[in-house]
Amino acid sequence: MIPLHIRISGFLSYHDAVELDFTSIDLACISGHNGAGKSSLLDAITWSLFGEARGKSSDVINLRADVKAAEVVLTFQHEDNTYRVQRTLPRNKNTILEFQVQTQTGWKPLTEKTTRETQARIEQTLRLDFDTFVNASFFLQGKADQFTQQNATRRKEVLSNILGLEMWEEYKNKTAEKRKALERAVDELDGRIREIDAELSEEDLRKARLAELESSLKQLTTARTAHESILENIKRNAALIEEQRKMTQMLSDGLNRARSALAGLEERLASKQADRDSYTDLVHRAKDVETTYKAWQ
Image (tube, rainbow, N blue to C red; front, side):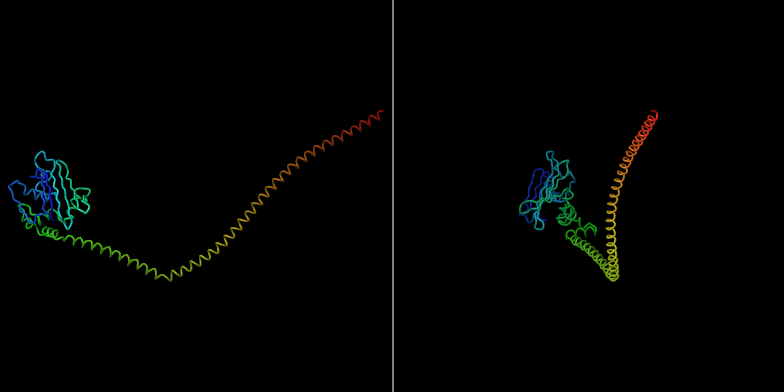
């Protein structure tokens, strides 16, 4: 990481905004009286990148009452790219963190949804955390021997981060995961091959069974054709029976009407026969009267 420009405002001993351009500086020595802001300048770099400085939380805000917030804007170059980090801490409020990268059309935001996620992206870009930074390329005042005082495990972690060895660990993990995935795929293929071999070994049995099924299908097809013919005959007979039933019903209705008419006719004939018998009886009585009358004369 190569610093290019820094702007400090309201941060520790810096009350007014101060800007410093590093582009024309190859080697610098910072000197001044106590409280002039020498350490604050270096703290501004670590605070902008990692949120770490000598002060914690609101302690980094300048003590003057008219200062509303501490703000540091750091522009730096890293791996052929130019980045800008802006960290702002308003008094009695939460930190605001912005991360950007310079493109041909301007500054492209790399800020994530939360401050924590944005901080993680900055450290991922630098491949450094605060501890590695202050033990490798930025020694804090009075802590130049901090690295040598670390235990072996911690020194190994710091050196690993400095040399970028964590990338090889990441490659190792990804390779192991890919190898496991390939092994699983090979196991699946082996299992499938075994299944195919088992199916191929049963080919003759399957062909014989297929021939049996085809024969059974032909028999069932013939039987179905016969059953369909029988069913069709049954349907035709049922239709004929229905027609005969209708004809029978019609004849039955005609017979009932004829019987009713015959009964009426018989009643009329019976009535006429009674009238004829009465007439005959009157004729006979008249004759008897006439005979009696003649005999009386």
